Length: 143
Image 1 (tube, helix red, strand yellow):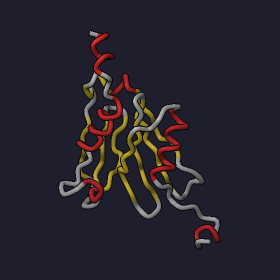
Image 2 (cartoon, one colour; image 1 turned 180 degrees about the vertical axis):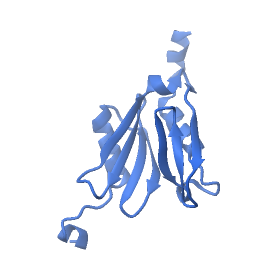
Image 3 (cartoon, helix red, strand yellow; image 1 turned 180 degrees about the horizontal axis):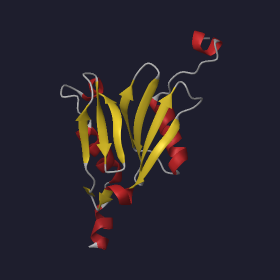
Image 4 (cartoon, helix red, strand yellow; image 1 turned 60 degrees about the vertical axis):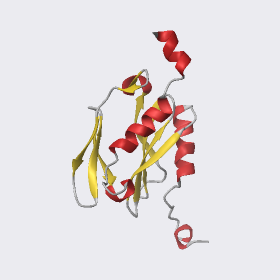
């Protein structure tokens, strides 16, 4: 038994538990997950299905991770193209702020999670487009 369990404290959830939460929250299979922000007490994840992007906050001050918001495929994509702006703003040496469209702005991200340039923008774009890319036959029938 770990000391956290002994004291009645929970641990931050691993990716598999966050994916399970996304599966339950959307009713669809999560096809991608991205850890956006991490401290010793909190993690922010983006999880994506073919139908929705979901933001999950795992904060040790709360009993369980919570869904913060969702965006539908219709809000994010037009055929295979991302139709919203994804950008970042400076915040500190360790973190920045991520903006996804006009409605989800100022979400903190940890620079160390995103390689030498510390930018999550391309990783978020790939998460969404890879998960929501339509099969060629679906696009063809719409044309």
